[in-house]
Length: 388
Ligand SMILES: Cc1cc2nc3c(=O)[nH]c(=O)nc-3n(C[C@H](O)[C@H](O)[C@H](O)COP(=O)(O)O)c2cc1C
Image (tube, rainbow, N blue to C red; front, top):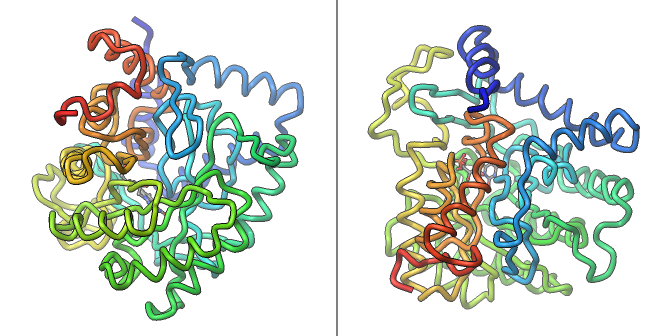
């Protein structure tokens, strides 16, 4: 059996030995990927990309799927928050991702919350973050994506979809009062609408004061209808929701989503729940995890996000596509979400803990799951554990 260098050596060294600051490590990784992206045509970089593809990606036509009007080479994407400013846009498919979501981006550039604001809970295979939408703003992301498109040779020319879809996740700027949220989301969408294959309205981050109140139907409707009115090219628009909602809240959101002709729901964002954690205190602050602000992701979120997927799938009889996210770290985790009703899944924390070769194992494992279930295509697996 091949030695997993990341889990056996790199991760213990970075996380436990050197105790690297998580935000520093994340920033350094993105800088490195950004440099690789800029110099993608250099012979040495082209070689490196080929090596990455060889070690990290896995191609099998049984994982292809058309969903929300787009073609996906496989159903597993990079979740929002990792590449907020599009530093490595265009590179994520090399790491095996079937799609990647940039952002959250806000209309105004903003620094986010004070540091420290990103923590590993190693024993729990979890991450706690209160980044607060640190990003360079919608106009900077638009400029970055145009530059990447030029590098890639106009990936989004008329109706010609790129090999692996790119999503853009929109949030509200902190300085914008909640009453002006519609204009804030619409301003970002206006400058970005030609540059993403799909768009996400994020009203579910726990780290922007008041944001989650926008999940209430009377707040949500004007935001979604304002965006749809601008959506002349009919790009798929999805809504990302929190895991901390009641069934009644979710049912009301689903109704609005159907009314506003959304392409789907992304379930879920991070949780404010702190139950059943092994980690009691954060080493970086000395405080009890229960007392620390922020959203929790990774293994502790896994079951709850799957429950939300199952609920939405049942509520809509499978009529509204679902992107499942929360605690996916293996093929079995992705399979649970797909069979509960998710057409696509995303991950973030799993990649941090499992390392860059994770996607190859995960995708291979999904094909094995298809074989075991006697199915020919991933599409056939959606919702099968949920009575449809
Ligand atoms: C450090 C960090 C930053 C995040 N930033 C965002 C964000 O900007 N927008 C967003 O919609 N979700 C954000 N998320 C949430 C993820 O997209 C995802 O919904 C959540 O982490 C659950 O997936 P996971 O368990 O695979 O990490 C962030 C997550 C982490 C760990």
